[in-house]
Amino acid sequence: MRTFLPFAAAALFTMSLGLPAPAQAPPAATLTIQADKPLHPVSPMLYGMMTEEINYSYDGGLYAEMVRNRSFTERGFGGIHHWELENQGTAQSTMRYDNETGPSDALPGSMVVNVTAADAKNPAAVRNEGWWGMKVEPNTTYTGSVYARAENGGGSMAVSLVNDVTGKSAASATLSPLSTEWKQYTFTLHTGAVAASTDNQLVLSLPQVGKVWLQVVSLFPPTYKNRANGNRADLMQLLAGMHPKFLRLPGGNYLEGDQIDERFDWKNTLGPLANRPTHRSPWNYQSTDGMGLLEFLEWTEDLNIEPVLAVYAGYSLKGDHINAGPALTPYVDDAMDELEFVTGGADTKWGAVRAKLGHPAPFPLHYVEVGNEDEFDKALTYEGRFAQFNKAIKAKYPSLQVIATMPLKRTVPDVVDDHYYKRAEEFFALLHKYDSMPRTGPKIFVGEWATREGSPTTNMGAALGDAAFMTSLERNSDLIVMASYAPLLVNVNPGGMQWESDLIGYNAASSYGSPSYYAQALFAEYLGTEVTTAALSGASDRVFTSVTRDPSKGALYVKLVNASTEPQEVKVSIAGSHVRSSATLWSLHGATRAETNSITDPKRIVPVKSTVKVGDSFRHMVPPLSVEVMILDAKS
Ligand code: AHR
Image 1 (spheres, rainbow, N blue to C red):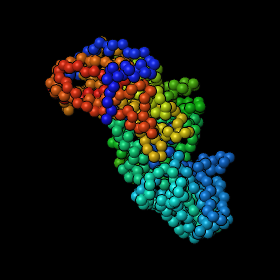
Image 2: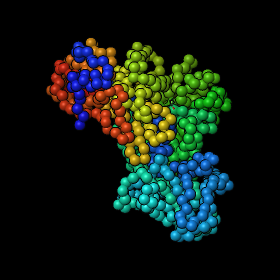
Image 3: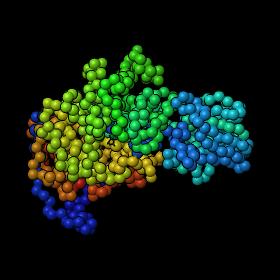
Image 4: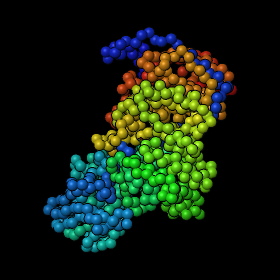
């Protein structure tokens, strides 16, 4: 368990860093709470998540596929990326991409392995290195599949998980007989008492001469809730720990693509993996689209949350756009099909497609976003594009809340999406922006925001900026209906990150939450249903608070953020409720703003639980660089 440095020790520590010694502790501040005077309800959807394919978030991240470049779409002068020949003994073979034959219209090419010498003792083979390794654990069943076609029917192919260091196979399966026609082979690999490691590769071995074509080579570990084509359990558990209410999907820039034909074209992400052509993401790598629209929706179902669906709105990042009018109609129709796929009954055209894919029940949907960051459209076409989408959506789904990605002059959208990527001090300066905003216009969705300090994941200084910002989100949650931190995920391997300062980091072996993650988790878990009248006075200008209450639980949640380097004593007085004498206190604290969690030190900064003495009136010392949540039993 962590302990806090007492003030004197903190001063000594500060001096040892060569920083000026803190002056005397500042005078006590006063926090006056009127527990029986709610200001307004807290938005029931306030905290959620934003996601897209960036930083190897799905491929090489949440989406549990272990084989990298399974469809051979990433190729260059060096050949097919992430695949090597692994000929044994006297075996001879070559491999190359053959664009003449593939198992589907979506994947018309394949890898051809041309074996010119091989036998049972000397098989020819190819191997895949995985996503910076492949995690293999003892007594575990891995589920795989591969499309194959052989020049000469009747031969076999062995599939094995092989340790890079020892060369030993942890598990193996034989696929036989190979057909001369394209066919999908499925297999399981069951490990025994092997040591857990990520130094593994998948090896496909051919003990006979002849050409064999391969496509969609796939291997999954056990997934969260045992979903086929599912997600990594450790990452889903971290996401569940954020207590989110929604998932904004599928982006972000990833929705738009650099070019129109690189947008998230949802119809190309459905069904068997061989039906998904894959596409280039604007973050400069190929997306397998294994995380397709249905998988996104199942992700929300598994966390018992709602999707906030962003539909492509006719603008891509490099400036290509479609003007409102007849040219935009096919894109509006496509969005309408998408809404039907998500929400329609199995008796509708697209609801029936969803049912055929195994999900007859519609998904809940209350918010749809038209585009992403359309303020970057230099041709200024968003007014017209939004109006056309909005009209069609409202005509069929009058109660759906339609989100615009920027303020508009001619149409009043239900909600406007605001994005903030800032340093902590910049967040402190805009904490009152929403306090004075008129409540007569559209509601606000803070669809992307983060304090960008620390890399690859954010540090304690960022967590303080985040927590300070969240106090303003809660205070203004009559106007701000939803907020989602971004980006959510980063693969911390070299080359894994395209965007610095992310919430959750991982490699093939493990994952961890940043201090910002824990601030998010605390704020979302301990959130009342109404904002309580509360006034903080006499505090440092880097001390922030939010007070909410859930009358049905008799709980009062007092959040205190001390982003200064000095402790802050607070005299708390609570009127309008009977407060029990002890409360639970969660405290997240860093010795410095730069202190952080990492893949090798994942739990350096985590919330610490304690019990504190409270009452109708009490004093509480908030340590420097701390985010605190006090849960008081305060019945009316
Ligand atoms: O979150 C990273 C990127 O920031 C998003 O893709 C985009 O919407 C924003 O500019």
